[in-house]
Length: 211
Image (cartoon, rainbow, N blue to C red; front, side, top):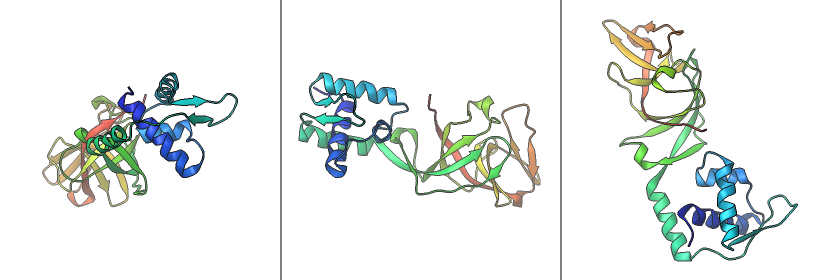
């Protein structure tokens, strides 16, 4: 009996080899299963080999031979469950949690995330660059999940577009006649702008961290 992840990997191996005639790389397997590191793939591959589903050929790159396949009905059920339990979000590039950088957008890249991490509405993902939000647990290299919105409340952590050119992730401050973007790191000062200079692009909905 295979675990869910073992079954998903075996199904992916089978489909990839039928399509490309060669086994996938460990990076491709990791990305397909949504794992953070290749060590998890190594464990899954070893588990499939121990159970007699695959055989690794020594001294050859990408050398995996499939000896038997998962139960077709089980594979279909796992695929259905995976589709229900995860969603694909556009990864639009990088955003500064520090000095604002030019806004980036690359809607061709997507990220699979658990559906339970986000609520209703449209969402997208961004990779964090900089250290200005470390005080609220947002670190460089993290991926933030953003709910699209053009308004936010005082105190919300938002993606702010400054003068239609620079994007940053900060806490929104609403004061009479001006908008503040506050860092969560004492080495960065709060920056203030007129209301027309700042556009809210979305609100923080979740965070993913790779170890």
